[in-house]
Image (cartoon, rainbow, N blue to C red; front, side, top):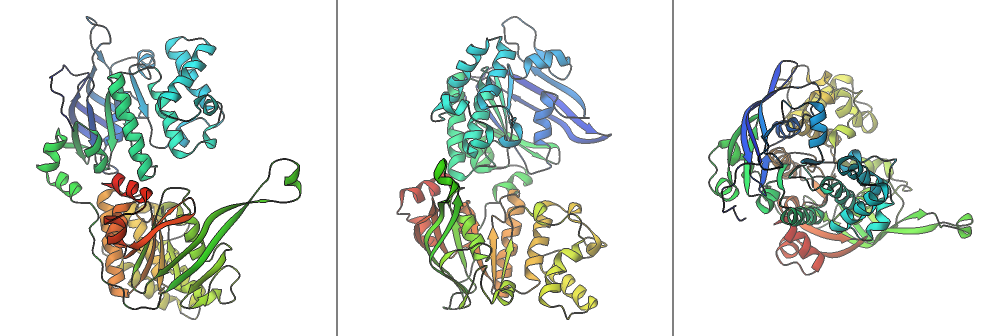
Length: 540
């Protein structure tokens, strides 16, 4: 990444920024600056204070006490700088969107679902630039075209739910850049996107940044994005800015222990060879279809078909991991549902040699052997149930003869196996999910799956909702459990690094079809299909 060669006066200079909630300080005396046209990455894990820091600059943090200084250079030569933290709400309304714009993490929640994309962009242009409705609409279409959305005039007339994740994020970028701001605050702009879409959005931002000359403050925990995008990086831990400098210098010679910890948190491969030859799960010509309505008169009499998985073939080895990688819409999650016996399918699907599916007569016995760990532990754990009820629930179904004391002993033993003990969390069994961190909740979800002693775990994006260091801890836990228990994993993910760390065999899926399969070394080191090469390159 090229460093700016000319020292320019800062566009934004932040000094001794402190943010408190109800008397508790969460951002402690942060100092940094951004030059015109510079790309600064603010890096840290969840709870580090990076998003609160960025939102405080434009005073979008509710019920916060903010002190310090955030001076924005004037738009006109000779005018005084603007002190953002002292500006009136009226002044801030003029600054937001025109001088400083923001892209949020999840566009589906940031965009208004009842207005079209074009109307939302046009509204900004009318408010900030005083354009007529016709001028604003034409400019909105031009803004969408600049982000590379196909058929921008047609897309402008659509609603957010009618666009894909990548298209929604492009629409957010078009809205943010419509008034050509001098500074863009990008809060985790690619976290909700697949790996190839992440690369596309970053390239788009870099291209637009070069065209407009704006500065960018990128808030992220993804170090690969920082390497690829930023000029400088500032690292936050616990509300403190612990290190900052040029990307090359910080990544090659980190000075702070926390920075070194983040850099070393890339998933590491630690697997043993499978323990046998007979597969735990086998699929042959697996096909999954969903009925879809047919428009017009014909739809009164019959339904159409959408083929979500077409002719897949795979085996999950005993004590081994089969990784399925692909983007959203590739069919990998549908494959997981079929593997869990939750949806009808065509073709052969067997678990330990027995037919498996929603209509199988041997469901109860096989159900115990195949368990699942979901992507988001907070939504997959009932907020109304205690830890004891959540983890022990499977025993009520599969081992109803156990006494309460026997069941409780199994719960304690399984929780200890995943690293949760009474010594760490007094009253552990009586606690609720909201009392734990994201990584701890994922450990609870793993314990819930393990307690019935399964042979196969279906891992559906088990670390995508976690920070990099917590992701590394959960992957190490899964690796250890596989060695100790001889577990088999069917790992569903879009993260090539996770596939490399965990899998023995891998399938690459796109549009419901398996494009490439083989050992991890074959597929990731010597990819044959152009799509696989794109995935691997995007993760580098």
